[in-house]
Each structure stands twice: as structure tokens, then as C-alpha cells.
Amino acid sequence: MSVALHPSSLRRTRKVRLTPWDLRALPAAFLQGRLTVVIISKMSYEERTYRSLINKDNLTSYNVKIAESDLFISSDSDLTEQAYKSLLKQRNFIEFYIHNHPDFRTSLLPLAENNLAPPIVRDMISKSKICGVGPMASVAGAVAEFVGYDLLGLTKNLIIENGGDIFLQSEKKVTVGVFAGESALSNKLKIIIKPEETPLGICTSSATVGPSLSFGKADAVCVISKSATLADAAASAIGNRVKSKKDIKNALAYGIKIPGVTGIVIICGNDMGATGEVEFF
Image 1: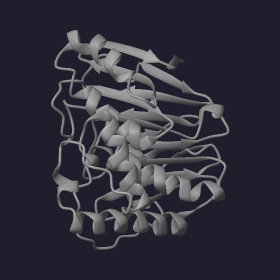
Image 2: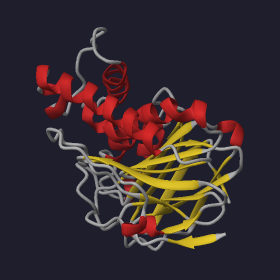
Image 3: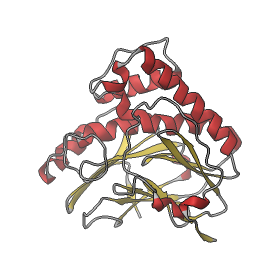
Image 4: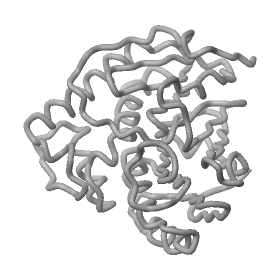
């Protein structure tokens, strides 16, 4: 069944005022077709109208928002209340840690691990250290992943999109299409994700569109990993190395050596490259 929703019709969006903590807005994603996820690197950051195009395939879709965190979730049933509680919990962990460790929010370099930190914070510090970037480079993927694992016991199929970073669990084959701004390759690449490969994270970073911080020039760097936290950090690290199409090969070679990264797709202008366990449709 094909359903077209206006953003204002997304059900039961809940909001609460918290101290802003600089959630990095990375390229966005939307669902389209039979369990098709499209990772995009161009969007309306005010309305996120891409979320109005949904083929539910018997999944229930809903939006959960707290301050900068804006999750679009599809699952077997409506888990709005549970997702809201989980998101609030994870944000509170990060908010409290930033209050006592301000450098966690601002550092562009890895920080020392802290065994006394909350689980999501420890994961961000650990995964960003592997990739050689600051911990906030992994925040969107980490939030999607930790909320995802909180919900997995309640649903067999789950897609959580958080500013373009996706946590995915599915009993069916999923195709992932990559949209990369003005590149001629936008929407022409579709990656196959098999059920047995999930749960996993699919995160993307872009230097040419959106407010993401990147020191490179790639239109889209898409990273696949069992850890969405790692995939987010790795996408930033790999994207920083792509200054032109000539850097694609070396960036792929660098990225696939990051422990935990299973697949990478890079688009820069009208050129692209892929490596690892990436199967195209």
C-alpha cells in the first residue's frame, strides 16, 4: 500500500525543551518502495519533506522529536511512547556528560576513554577514537543505535533515521539508494542489505550540501557497519580525505581498514567508488 503523508500528519510528535547540545545534522534519509531506504545528502532542514513519501509495507511510521533530535521510525507497531522514553534517556546521558566535560561537545580529536561515563558516551568515545575524529562526529548514529536496541525486543522490523544516519533491523531484503546532491549519480546506486546482515548501521556524510562539518569535498560518503556509531564516525573520517575525485581510491583504501567497517560508497561529482561487502541492485 502506497501512502503519501504531509509532514504535519506524522503522528504524535512530542517535544520537550532541553539545553541544546549541538546534534550534528548530517544528510537525511527517507523510506520509499518496498522497504527501500534512500540516504540523501540534500534536504529541507526545516520541514524534512522527504519523510512524506512512504510505502509502509505494513510498517507503522512515526516521528519522535526532542529538541535537536528528530527521529523518523518505522516498526511493526506504534512504539512512539517507548521510543520517546529511550530518546529522552540517551539525550540526558549525553547532556549530563557534556555539562561536566564540555570538551566532549567541541573536540574535533579523539578523547580519553572514561569507564564511568554512560554507555552511549563510552561508545561514542570508543568508536570516534578508532576513526580519529571527535566524539560528536558519531552522535547521530549513536542515538539511532541506542534507541534502536532499546526497541528491538518490541519489534522484528525497525528502521530509525536520525539526520541521515540509520539503524536497521529487517526480516526482508532492503535496498538502499544513495542520493548525492547535484551529482549525476544521485538515485542511480542501490545497495542491497540482506536480513541476515542486520541489525546494522548505514551512515552518510557530505561536504557539499547540508550543515555537516567536513574537511573534504565528497558529495556523499556512505558507510556500512554493524555499529551505527562507528559508521557515523567513519563516514566523517573518510569524507575528510576526499578533496577531489582523485582521492576516492585512497579514501576507500583507508576507510576499509577501519576495524568494524564492512562497506563504503563514495560519490564525488560524477565519479564514484565502492569497496568491501557492498552488493548493488
